[in-house]
Amino acid sequence: MKHSYPPKARPPEAEIDGVLLIDKGQDMTSHDVVAVARRRLNTRKIGHCGTLDPMATGLLILVVGKATRIQDLLMSEEKEYEGTLRLGASTSTQDAEGEVLETKPVPELSAEQISGAFGHFHGDFYQTPPMVSAIKKDGVPLYKLARKGQVVEREPRLVTVFQHQIRGIALPDIDFRVVCSKGFYVRTYCHDIGERLGCGGHMAALRRTRSGRFSVEGALTFAQLKEVSPEEILAKVLSLRDVSRLRGA
Image (cartoon, rainbow, N blue to C red; front, top):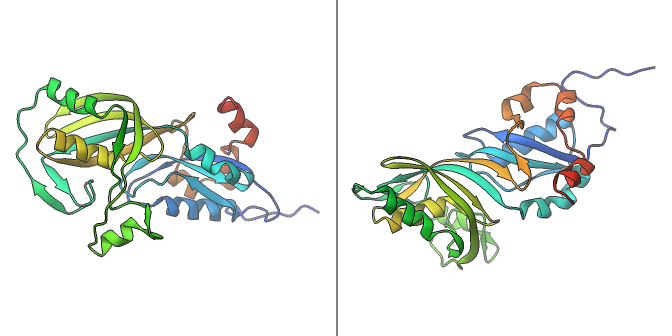
């Protein structure tokens, strides 16, 4: 005798091992996405590769079942972002959600000056992580210390910008694309370029478009994750074999 299940549930005995690509929307945490995916797929063993801030959109890689074993491997691969740097204001979080700490007039910058500032942060260089980050100091995440108004010394980290492109200039905003290494903070990149240009700046928008060989194109949106049938979600899960083939492993 065949058993039927409600359209929003899956058979509890079924196992899922693979990768699910999600296009995260704004004003939600990466944890919010994982929680919904866990409920829709009726599985406990699920995680994500690389946190996206609530204001950021784009590719969030979910690892399910045995795929959680390669979570660190997938997180170590290069990332591609599209973002907007807004000049003239430095903020406490180095992005648009923070408190404005200082404002300065934005000069009539030439394309050459802007290109030179971006070019300064290309290749290998050291970047000081922001206070609002998950990096731990004596076991406590920095963002928790930042909430208490504390600022502690952070060790600069070696990062790499493999590619960058200035996509548009409409001062005070500069649209850009950057391909970078693991551990790179685009917020800090924007802040540092603003400082280099002498007027300060912060990240006004961010979208992750690629991580390793995985692209946001064709990823399941958060709305779809909540609304489509479990069978449609399962159809989007990449098997471990698919992942290995895609990565060329």
